[in-house]
Length: 106
Image (tube, rainbow, N blue to C red; front, side, top):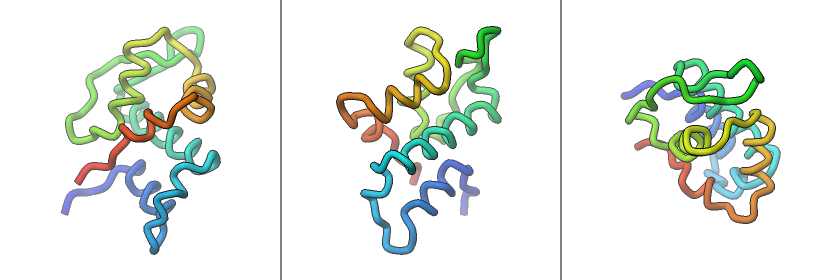
């Protein structure tokens, strides 16, 4: 069995024993999921902080973590922004499309 990343472990904890998928769409859990994704990429040296404290891409995203791609792309393709702004974009954005693209690996 493959070892889970802490992002995957957190998501499983959020889902609980009943697999309540709607929990992922509450603001409190969503913020924590995004924070876990950012922390995962920071510890894997995929993203870093520039001299202004904004998120920037510094490495390639592993193919084994496709659930990080939407956040990775938001950082890679957009202007550098602080983590707080990125989280706000996801949480208070007009659509839930960013969350639909965050799928855990099989």
